[in-house]
Image (cartoon, rainbow, N blue to C red; front, side, top):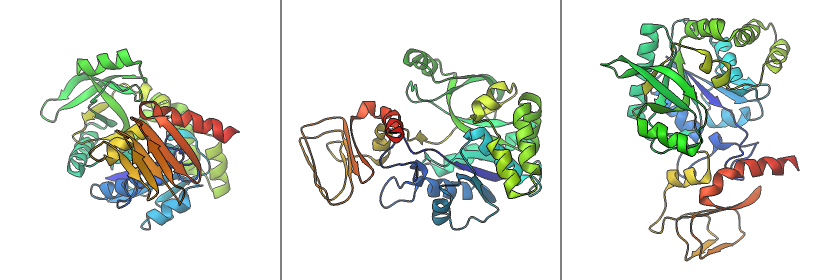
Length: 346
């Protein structure tokens, strides 16, 4: 099998720890651990024989530093961000002619936080088996543990394989309102759409030809580009579109494997706090010059020599770096992304 790691993003949701020049997937969640990208690469290396990474050209040097085993062939630098559909087209164009057309390809995001590597391997081995056997694109969906409004949902259809517990896909649902999400979770018929796609080159080409001719045309233009200048021109002409809209919502024969591993898309400081944990008061504190008094359930991260004091607060985020300062209620920390975008426009 082959893995393609999508390592993009603008670094807004965890600003100022994550920035446009050094986004989330390059971050270390704990100071003694590897970055999210490095951990994803390590997981994938236990599963596949070849790993490609698709990165924004502006981050490619950081990716090379973190993943020295990458070669010019296996690092695919986007001339500019054009959405996940373009990332997939670029990877398929690179893979064409270098591997068997029926070898399973796993597309996965580089910034997911996963601890259960054994469960991860099991789920994707099963997905790879199903795509070989059925010649269909297979998704890996995550069992929801709360009615999240921040993820799309996959509605499970009929049980396709009762022994392997694989389902057909009935529909995709956009990020729902809370009441709707609560109904999805209660029903037991929905999975979070984590953006995992498994299929061979032939399977993806067949699906694009049938359901997304514009995407297939873009893929062919990248694969046929005779020079780097022609490739860049072809890439810049691609629509800025997510794979969900460009292809997934149009395909009528997907299969889905419910994930057998823990999963977190760290999309806010509240998520990051869950990942790193806390002390007996529920606080996570980073920085030698941070002092807390009467504080509970909070995330405090400081850099440099400037002293920071947090007193008498609960459920807050305080982040102080050379790139900026954030002070927020933790349960509203998902709004950091929009605020950081406004700051970047100033």
